[in-house]
Every structure is written in C-alpha cells, then in structure tokens.
Length: 337
Image (cartoon, rainbow, N blue to C red; front, side, top):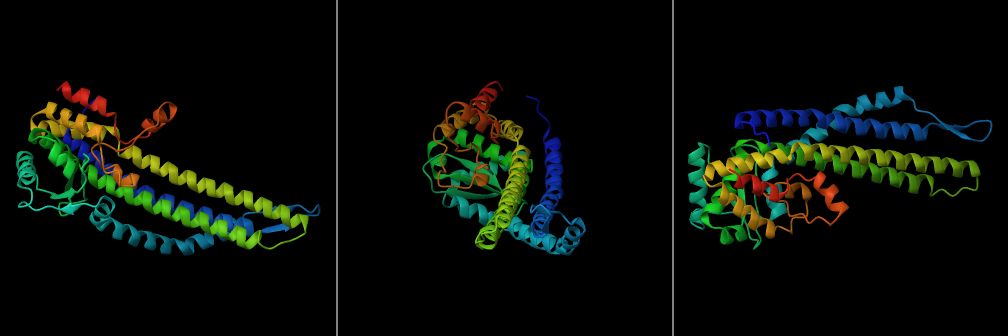
C-alpha cells in the first residue's frame, strides 16, 4: 500500500470533485439527446414498396430541439443540484434518523472530539447520534458549517475511550481530506441521474403501450412496425440503464478503497493508538448496524459498510465494486503500525 500526504489527498479529492461537476452535465445532456433522437426516429417512418417500414433519424431536427431544451435542462438540473447540495445535512439525517447531541447530554464524546480537533488544528464539527444499538459511525458535510460526525448509541456504549478516539479520528480524517464533500457530490449526482433515467424509461414505456400497442390493428405491417418500435424502446431503455450504472460505478471508484486506508492511517495517528482502532474495527465488523438505512449511497458513508455478501462467486463480484476494502485487511495494516 502506497500512502500519500494529506495535502496531496486533499488536492486529488478537489480535482475529482471538479471532474464530477464537469462530467455530470455531459451525461445528463447526452441522455436528453438520446431521448429526443428516439422520439424523432420512432416518429419518422414510412412503408416502402415491399410493405416494410423504413425509419430514419433527422439529426438536424433533433439538434434543433436539443438546443432549445438545453437552457431548460441545465437550469432545472442546476436548481435541483443546488437544493440537494445545500440540504445534504437534512438528507443524511432523514435517511439515518440522526439527531444532534449536546455537550451536556454526552460530555465524553464531546471531550474526545474536541481533544482530537485541537491535536490536528481543525474546527470542531457537529456531533450527531443515531439511536441504534448496533455499531457504526460516519462523517458527512460539504463545508465547515455542515461537517458532522455521527455515532450510533451502540458504538458509544460498547467501545472504550481509546477505541472511540480511533473511530472518531478516522471520521475527522475524512473531513480533513475533503472525502465527505466528494461523496456528497457523487451521491447527489447518482440520485439525479437515476431519477431522470426512471422518468424517461417510464415515459417511453407509457408512450408505447398506451400509444402504439393500445390501438388495435389487423394490419400486419402496423404490427411489425409496433414490434420494431418496442425493440427500439427497450434497446434505448437498456442503454440509459447502462449509462446510469456506469456513472454509479465511476462514483463508487471515486470513493475508492484508498480513502478508507488513508482515513485509518489518519485516525491511528490522531488517537496515537493504531491497535485501538484495529480493535474498534474488529468489534464493528461483528455488528455493523444501521440496517434501517435502505439507501446504499448513504451507507457508503459508514466506517464499515453494513453489507452482507452472499457466499461464493456473488461475494467475489460484490467485493470488486465495494467502496470499502476488506475489514480484515484494514485491521492487519493497522496492527503493523
């Protein structure tokens, strides 16, 4: 494992965030153009002398409507992204059931966070608690006003102070490295892409079944035309799904395993006890918790993803696309410090 410095990691994360910001509108606009092209292609058809339907794509018309739709799409997606970006704290709270905790309510956690922040010369983030007897923790936020460390009641009650310091140090390192900003950006992007994809596919499905197939016709040529339309709809729908899935993979790789290793190293350095963090990871992996969180994009925030892989080949493929490295490997590295 090749480690890099904190400033290098921050620079890389800022660069990846910028790349995501540039890549996102390209994917959205590409999906819009494909949709317009599909509508144009299915709408431009005639029967040749042999009774076969012939369709063609009028690219000039497609480009004309695309240019007219361009400002509306950019404006709508921009507003959507801005609302989601600046309301990410409420989004995470709603998905996890987290609530703020006061110093009076839990002075031990406040003291640990405060001491670690003083040690690394960073502003103290907000502290949230999830009422869950299982063990997990995560960091979130995009700036100093929204940076938050969230802990379950289970992890607070079942880890000792040294182990808690290691876990909190891990989460503070995510904040220092700007990992949370990159992750929140990718979560919003994937959500918007997936929603638009679902709407477009549903519109195409409705247009076909209630537009083309619903009109009964005894004409064989019409039936063949409808069959070709159906194939085209499902091919384009599959293409949209592939694009959205590819984008999801890209964001998963952006939140790579290396960031977890970096956060482990930073947490071990902050708490001054790598073995304590290794012990904490071992305990958390036995009962990772937060099973009520059904959104996998939010679950990527957790120190250990509460995923349960199936044995055999499915476990192998799932682990390939996991955003978190194998916990046993993380523990082994920490024990070698």
